[in-house]
Length: 341
Image 1 (cartoon, rainbow, N blue to C red):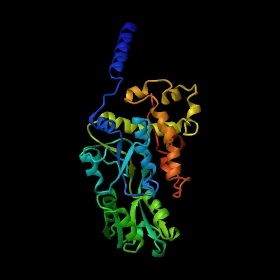
Image 2 (image 1 turned 135 degrees about the horizontal axis):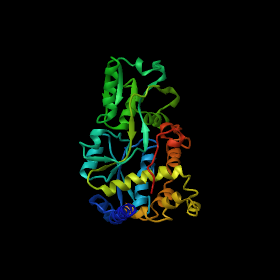
Image 3 (image 1 turned 45 degrees about the horizontal axis):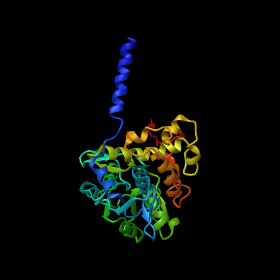
Image 4 (image 1 turned 45 degrees about the vertical axis):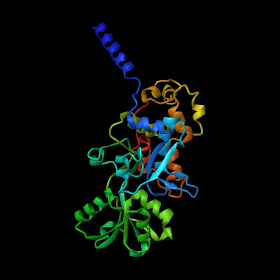
C-alpha cells in the first residue's frame, strides 16, 4: 500500500513539473512586445485615479496597474493610462484599446460572463450611497421621495437607484449625465437634489470638488454591494493570473508585514513564507511566468495594499476613509489573499 501511495506521489510531482511554467497568451505577448501596459482608468476620481498638472496618475486603482507592470517588466512605470467613462470602459476593453480595466468597476455576474471578461479580484469593497446639501434638511435616504438624482448611465449605480426607490415605494427624477465631472458640476450647481454613486466616490467628490465640503452630507444608507476590481478579457489565462496575483501579492505582503520601507531587510528573513513570497526561495515566479523578484518589485516600487490604501484614500490622504471592509481579514475586514505557495 505504501508503494502505491509513493507511486501516486511521484506522478503528482511529475505533473507539477510539466505544468510548472506558465504559457504566455496573446494579450501578455502583446503587452511584452509593446513594452508597456495599457490600463483603462476613470476620467478622474480622487484617491482612485486622477492625473496632476504634469500628467502623473495616482490612486488606488492606478496602483493595481503599476503592480501589474512591476510584475511583468520589473518596472512599475511602464504603463499608459487611458481615461474611460462608465459607458466607454467595456467597449475599450472588448476592442483591445486597453489591456486591463482598473477603474472603480463593480464585479457582477453578467460582466464576468456575458460581456466576455474576467474579474481578477477585489481591490476595494464599496457600496452605493447618497450625498445631499445640508440645507435640504434630509437625514435619511428614506426621505428622498420625489427628489431629482444625478447619476451616470451604464453603471450598476443607475440600476440600484431604480431598484431602491421602487422597493421603498418612492419616486425620483433622474438627471442622467455621462461624464463624471459634468455630473459633479450639475450637482453642485443645484440641478439635482441628490448625487448617488459608490460611497468612496462620494467622499472623493466632497473632498476634492465641493465648493464648501462641510455643506454636504453623505446619508447613512448603503444600498448595494459594490466589490470593485480589475478586469481583463477572456482568453489569456496567464495574463489574468498575473493581474490577479499582483493584487494578491500586495495583500499578502501587508499580512506578513512586508512594506516598501523594510522589503530589503525582509530578504534576510528566515520565515519560509516570506522567503517564498520575495523569491529568495525560487518557484513562484516560474509558476506565474515572471521574474522570481516579482513580489519584491511590486512592494518596493508600489507598496503593500495597506500602504496603497493609506496614501490614496485612507488616513494619509485628504479623503480619510476608514479601512472598514477593506481591512485585512485578520483585522475584521474582507481583504484576504490565497497563499503564495
